[in-house]
Structures are given as C-alpha cells and as structure tokens.
Amino acid sequence: MMPPIFMAASRDQALTALNDFLPKVPFYGQRRNRVIPGHDDVSRLSGALRHRLIQESEIVDAVLQQHAFQAGEKYLQEVLWRTYWKGWLEWHPSVWADYKHSLAAWHDGAKDRTKKRAVALMEGRSGVAIMDFFAQELMQTGYLHNHARMWWASFWIHVERLPWYVGADFFMRHLCDADVASNTLGWRWVAGLQTAGKTYLVRASNIRKYCDPSLLEAHQAGLERLEDDVVEACPAPFASIPCIETLERPTADLSRWADRRVGWWVHPEDSLADQDDLQKSKPVSVLCTSLVHETSRSSVSNPSTRYRHQVADDVRQRVRSFMGSGDRIHTVEPSQHWMESLVQWASENHLEAVLAYRPFVGLIHDRMTELETRLEVAGVVMVWVERDWETTWLPYAKKGFFAFWKTAREQLLVRQTYVSS
Ligand SMILES: Cc1cc2nc3c(=O)[nH]c(=O)nc-3n(C[C@H](O)[C@H](O)[C@H](O)COP(=O)(O)OP(=O)(O)OC[C@H]3O[C@@H](n4cnc5c(N)ncnc54)[C@H](O)[C@@H]3O)c2cc1C
Image (cartoon, rainbow, N blue to C red; front, side, top):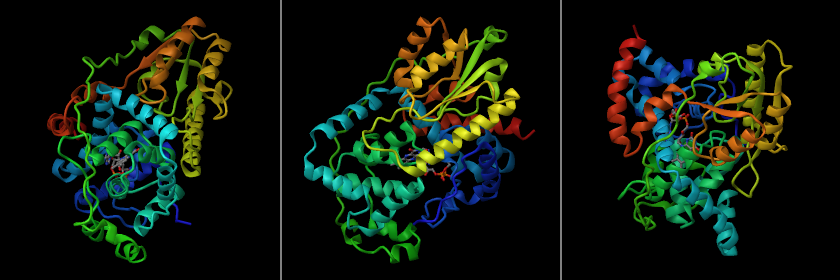
C-alpha cells in the first residue's frame, strides 16, 4: 500500500494546511515540478478548493499579505489557473456536453481489445513501471502531483493512443479533487485540443529530471517507450470551440429573502454555506448533499468517496454550530436520488425558497433547469447566489490564459495594497 497523502478534508485542516504552506510559497516556482514522496513542495489544497472548504480569495489574500508580489506570483498564478478553467468552461459549455457524449459512445462502441488495454493502464498493468506506479498512487491515495498527471495523461494519449475522455473519466472517478473544468481542460490541453499548436509530450528526460531518483530507480521497466526520440504526438484535430455570447450568472438580491421561510442547499461544489452572502438569510432548515450521480458507468473509488464523506461531515458540523443544533439539518444519502430528496425536503419544510451557491458547468449544472421547474411546481423558488470571486473573474476567462492573467495580475497588485493595509 502507498502511504497516505495529506489532503485537507475539513475547513480547519485547509486553513492549517494553508498556514503551513505559506512559508514555502516563495520557493514554489523552483520546486513545484518535483515529484517526490509526500508532495511537500506543493500545497495539496486542491481537494479543499474543489469542494470550497476554503476559497480562492482566502488563499490569494493570505499570500498577498505575507509575501511580496513577485515572491508569491507563481503560486497565485496556479490558483488563478483553476479559476480560469472554471470560467473558460462556463463560456464554452459544449465541451462538457461533447465529453459526456464521447464517453458514452466509447463505452457502447469501442473494440474489446481497446477496452482491455485501457483497463490494463487504469489498473497499473501497462508495463511502463513508473506510469503503473502513478496509476496505483491515484487509486490508492486519491491524489496525483500535477506533473504526474501531465505525464500519465500524455502517456495515455500520445503513447498508448487511447481517447483522452476515457482517461479523463478515470481521473474523475479517483481524484479527491476531481473537478469538471480543471480535469476536462487539463486533459484536452495535454491532447493538443485546447490551445492551437500546443501538445504536451511525456519525455523520459523530463521524468529523469523531476522524478524522485529512488522512486524512478525502483520503476525503470519500460521507460524506453518514453524516450524523447520515441514519443510522437498523436494528431489532434484542433477546432475552435463555440463560445456563448454572454455569461449569465446573475446573483440574487438576498435582502428580499431576509425574513422569509427559506432553506439552504449545501452541495459538493460549495461547502461554505456558513460564510458570506448566504448568511444574510436565516434558514429554517439546511439540506446537505455529498454526492451527485456520476457520469461514468464505472464505480467511484474508495479514497475519493471517503474524502467526500469527510467533507460532508465537516459541512454538517459547521452548519450545526451555525444553526445552534442539528435538528434542522437534513442529509441526502448517496443511495438517494438527490433531486427528489431536495424537492421533498423543500415541500415538507414548507419553504418559500431554496438558496444555494450557483454551481459550475458539470453534473448539478446540467440539471438546474429541471430542478427549478420541479421546485416551482411545488411552489418553491430556487435562488442561486453567486460569490464575488466568480463575478469578478469569470467574465475575463473567455479567451486565453495569458490575457486573463495580465488582467488578474494588475488587479491582484491593487488588491495587495488594500489587503496588506
Ligand atoms: C490531466 C490533468 C488533470 C487534472 N485534473 C484536475 C482535477 O480534476 N482537479 C483539480 O483541482 N486539478 C486538476 N488538475 C490541475 C492540477 O494538477 C491540480 O490542481 C494540482 O496538482 C493539485 O495539487 P495541489 O493542490 O498540491 O497544487 P498546487 O501546486 O499547490 O497549486 C495550488 C492550487 O492551484 C490550482 N492549480 C494548480 N495547478 C493547476 C492546473 N494545472 N490547473 C488548474 N488549477 C491548478 C489548484 O487549485 C491547486 O490546489 C489537472 C491537471 C492535469 C494536467
């Protein structure tokens, strides 16, 4: 068994992990690419960010307060990559629809031989020992270092010539930080579908440079398949992706609901209901949902499922202390149908409105309209609340990252003057 990798699964753990990582931020740029046991050169905050146990704004402000801008810039840039990918997918939602469609078509139509090879890679039986180690690490810990994700995805696509969306689904099922935007677009970027003329190729020389020597020493078999002069890019038909005309993510005026009979729905995309805007309302009841149905036909692994349960426990504890008791907190169990449970809960509690943070393109987002309609039939209004972070940054994420970062950099420099004063 692999040793466990620390991944903050509660808000307190996330705040502590951030605090512990802050002194390392100035060295992040130099060290972040090294793949070493324990992964102490990176923050491992992605699970907490993904479930919003901690907000991007909190991380950014902590870095800006403690460090000169340049010292923190590389780390800030990575945190903003996450925001950028989320925004980009909001502007280009057809990528997610196409992904789901391609995945379903592959399960129905792929040849048995291809499926068997895909399973061998996913089970860590490819014959390239270091890649097999990463597959095992992912399944046993729920985490992979960014560089290992890039190598493994490139191995899958460019060496094994398997479809990127099947590999992406494997990551989605096993990562504790599984995130529709970062994962789908990370895989597309490796495949060369995201940026014209840019493909990421796994190279033995790069693995030798950045992988822990003893780890690589123990996993030499098959490395010759990744030698620099052997690996060739799998041709990717780059096509520009349709972009929506306007980003419609309005936020609700919560003052309207201040004295009304409302409930909060806390879902896996935003676990901080007890912070910020939602607090302007007084919920009579709170519903917590830890899992929504998966896209994939295959099962979800233990570490990521366990992680999500830990996140859900943390949500319940925090909401309990906010509400003063656990009496009015309800939970949708993974075996229950989340939408039916939600509508039933809203009706039984005679709610006028359900308040929730607005989800991003993904599984809940896919069913927002259906949910709104079903609640309306039950006489309940669905109210989506947008955080300032999204309102500020998502509009800029329509095009490439570097234009996005140019604007972000300028705004963060200004932000630094007031967060440090
Ligand atoms: C093929 C592939 C799939 C990926 N799938 C996911 C995913 O499902 N969920 C996910 O959160 N990240 C994903 N990433 C991005 C990245 O690998 C992880 O966010 C990062 O490794 C998490 O570890 P960390 O928190 O220690 O990162 P750190 O290096 O400490 O970075 C801090 C934070 O910045 C953000 N970040 C860092 N690198 C990236 C990046 N390349 N893209 C977007 N955000 C980034 C993350 O939120 C991260 O927590 C993927 C990358 C690739 C190449």
